[in-house]
Amino acid sequence: MIKVVVTGAAGRMGTQIARVVRATEGMAIAGGVERPGAAAVGQDVGALAGLGPIGVAVVDDLARALPGADVVVDFTSHDASVRHAEACAERGVALVVGSTGFTPEAKARVAAAARRIPVVLSPNMSVGVNVLFELVRQAAEVLGDAYDVEIVEIHHKKKRDAPSGTAVRLGEVAAEALGRDPKDALAYSRQGIIGERPPWQIGVQTLRGGDVVGEHTVYFCGEGERLELTHRATSRDQFARGAVRAAQWIVGKPAGVYDMAAVLGLGARR
Image 1 (cartoon, rainbow, N blue to C red):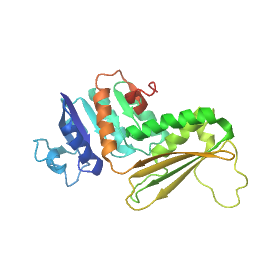
Image 2 (image 1 turned 30 degrees about the vertical axis):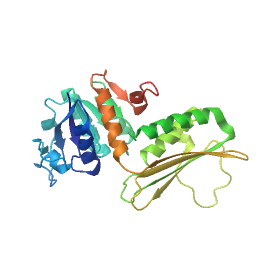
Image 3 (image 1 turned 120 degrees about the vertical axis):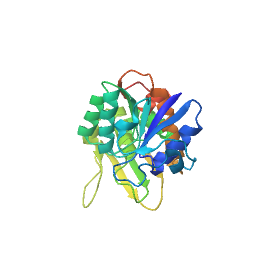
Image 4 (image 1 turned 135 degrees about the vertical axis):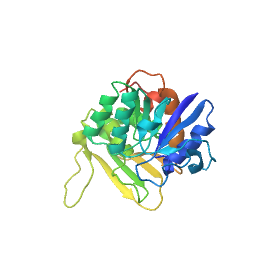
């Protein structure tokens, strides 16, 4: 039995992950965590997820939930996720992180924690999106520099970071496949008289509004034709299912940072 701790246990993703864990054979909810002062602290994790009481209360400190746990599934914020990675490293508990908005410094701290534990770190846990990453890589390699690459993403109006971590990763995948440095190639804004589009540039544009769960389109624009690769999420279920799949996979793996491509067998460990 894989024992799972869910952070952000009262949130939209946390409650969905709890439901998927409970419905998955061979897995059990071992703990739930919320920020100090949250109304959910002390409440039953199962009750918050609509499962009925399961005898597991939400706590406000991850360290208190880790004894006996095999893996933590974390969808909170990049700063909280860093602290959670360090707490898991202290106690030898595997970690799955679906938070976005990581700074280079935050990623470095997660990588440092991953020297002691296995960590799946992915900007998007959806199986479909991770297949999209692979398709974009293949398309960029085949089409090459003759096609201009542009990325457009849209999410709900409450999303805090922009562009989405998924859009950034799509840009990185395309740039790497084309032999370009993502730091130089990705353009996040255009305004005014900007002149002709540089051929090496990869545009990443952000839209926000309503309750859109998430949509990403990668355009390969050539002379006389255009290839569009699109993923549309219509619910958060697929993110939760992917995260739980990653939690099943990561337990027992060697220390290190992994991505969903490794979980799905689409690529090697980073």
